[in-house]
Image (tube, rainbow, N blue to C red; front, side, top):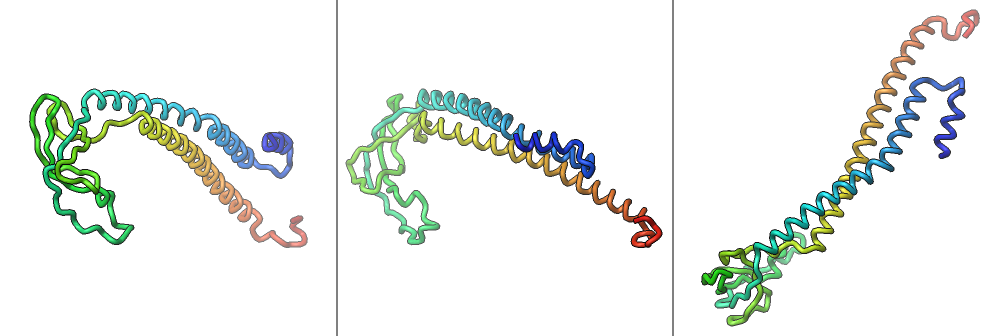
Length: 200
């Protein structure tokens, strides 16, 4: 509000230039867009992302099935990387040879990841498709909501950056124009600058 009142009082200032008014208007428009358009863009993007992710989660829950697999053999574990910066999440899992029966009654056997303390004969939960092939856990509602919120925040931030970038480009063009006008004014002053009888 103070910026608007200051701009209103500044309109009759004898020192103001047209470029000053354009720069101030660009700043006001950019602020209004960042305050109004960026949140709207974030909300719209987040809503669309949430709808798409919820549909994907429903499809995954319909196509993926939780089953129990039986550990047949614990496979040798590769040595754990002692460097915490290069160690991966796979260090927290144990590779086992397991057997399971698919939703269609087909029998399967293969290498799977189990918890670190898995022993032969132990049963653990896996997810498979309709034919018994191992797949990842389906997307849950909390993860879908988190991804949608992050998408909305990202869209709002990108909009704000784009608006501010456009404002900076306008200001840069105005500064170049001012420098050009100053050069022209200095050239007009020329040799008369500083002379007592030049009226300067």
